[in-house]
Length: 130
Image (cartoon, rainbow, N blue to C red; front, side, top):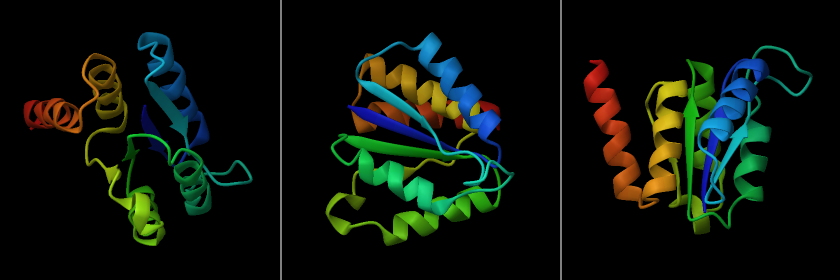
């Protein structure tokens, strides 16, 4: 099982991306989760929600995190510094466009869920955008 966590400043954005990916990439091997916005539904990020999602899905083989801008990335990095070292190695922030990166990771996880294959395909995406 692969888990993808989307961290955006807007819950509407991350929820919408989850809807798109789960509709277009139906797979029992990929879970896509929204960690957008603040606890009260405002614009911002909630590190505690990110941490909770990671801990709730620690049975996943890998947990990939994608962020939109600025403080979402800082929130991801802060959480990754704080999580239990026993499963920290299976968690990875991927520096790629939120929508396209998460979509490519989900498609690849459905085809070949190996860590190497997912990173290869996301890196292809990043290299083609530059």
